[in-house]
Image 1 (cartoon, rainbow, N blue to C red):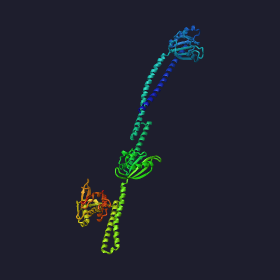
Image 2 (image 1 turned 60 degrees about the vertical axis):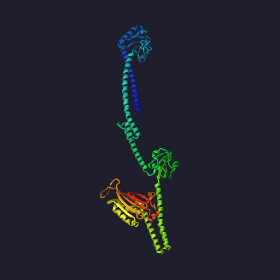
Image 3 (image 1 turned 60 degrees about the horizontal axis):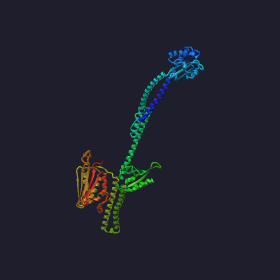
Image 4 (image 1 turned 90 degrees about the horizontal axis):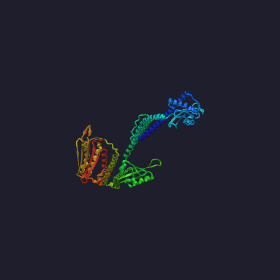
Length: 605
């Protein structure tokens, strides 16, 4: 902008200077011309006065030399100008400064010729006789006549030239002062014009650097002010648009980062443009490592590189499932979709990675569940059918055999009924269609009632049931479902504990960081309750511990069926504990026994 200011100032100064110079030159020439014209006019008036005052004599030149020379000297003394009297044929009759007899004929002198033609003649030239620049003015007595006598005055223009030089000096000094003033004014004007432009330029640069809050200070509503207003309007519009763009980018980034599917965008040259958070997790690489690089540099499954290459070539939707082993084993469903910016412009491909490991595992579990249910149902039905056929074949006639067979049919029917009931119960629990009715439960009386229900079963095997519960211990829970949890665990303990063993139930209060109100606004110093159920049974092998809460999973399948279990009890317990927002864990040693620990919050929130 400084160079523009300098150029503008120089242009203005040169323009003003040139105008001042030309004006001064014209003025000087005009003054010089007017000055000379004024001198000449004065000389013409003087000559006319002379002609009116003197007598113009005629005769031979020798007779007239003295008279006209005397008159020329007299007039010179009065006017200060050189005076010459010239006869019509060009002969000099009288001269104030020279001897007229020695002077050449003046008929061809320019001022004389002009005077005879026009009445007045003028000329400026160097005099041969005097050797100086002279200004000549001639006046004809009879204008238009070739034989008219002439009176001529001449004066040295040295004085005129001195006066003109003095005029030029003062004129140049005045022009110089005027030029300096105009230069200062021009620079100030250029500065005033360019300063707002500099501010507009600075604001434009800030806007270019994404500082959209920058604004121009508008002081005048002229053209530059309108430009500043337009820049401000543009900046405000850009700021609003960038705000909307950033908001949309933030929303899009939030959507991408929170998607459960991995998203990878690849351009038509194979360069990775975008990677969301799930794609980073699935591929085991960060976006910083891959964005801007070729997909082949990802060092991933060969099948993935192949499907990307195929998609870039064929430019059509592709689908496949690939097992990934890095960073962990996953089964991924791959959907590759071509991206077109227009009908014919291919932009690349969009890779959608969906982890279907859990879905396939659930499908496998569902298939296994159906197989297990079929197998579990088939066993009692086959027993009922077999013994019924035997009775129909004639065994009914033997009362003892018939009674034994009917008892077996009854037991298998009961087992089938329990199995179907547990399957329906598990289905309701898993689908969370079980309406829980939460209410305060006093655990001391609750434990006593629950143990009393199983005391007969424990007494039949000679198993001791022991309880240890703190007084005034409360818990918000669905009492029926809580009893179902505890009875399932206690029943398992009785079933898998040899005769003479012991099953213990212990309930204690624990604090995990904050107190919880129990009832009527009274606060307690505990916020969780732990229920321990320990038996001295056969125990569970360490390898089976992670799977004991699976449906139909049995550690000792023969013993489980003999004990009348369906294999669904612990799975139901796990789901009911989850519905109470609690946790259940197990510790066991083979031949020593098992301990189940349930931790439930005091208040359901």
